Image (cartoon, rainbow, N blue to C red; front, side, top):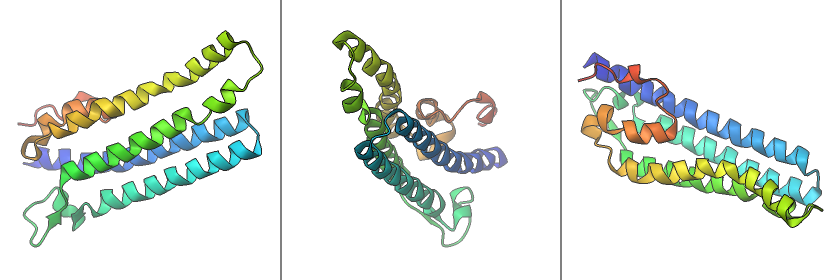
Length: 179
């Protein structure tokens, strides 16, 4: 049981780190875009997208820390009067809204890229380079049905596939030896 408790505590920490990392990455991409396209309209749109991402981050942290009340009930179900919201609903909501923000950040520069004074093949090539980031969106889409396969009673085994597509499990030793 102590190994399962350690796994669940690590999962809680990972959720928090994941939300912070994803938001920091998206904000850094927006800052990069801003340097590429120093136009007033683009700056305002990028600012709005940045605010949406910060609001998503705050909401995700809110959910991560209030998913179970008290927080320790997340890994210690023996606590009296503890309650958790539905894991799958939380997972789908966070993944779905994260996917929407991923798509927005991905397509944001396309109108400005297409407006470059280059030949059409060069514009297509530049847009194609930027669209390499669509792998993140594909990973989000792949992760959604994998979330449905997670069995809360055996999350150490059934969450692995969704975790791989979330970038959660960089090392396999976290779940090794957990029966």
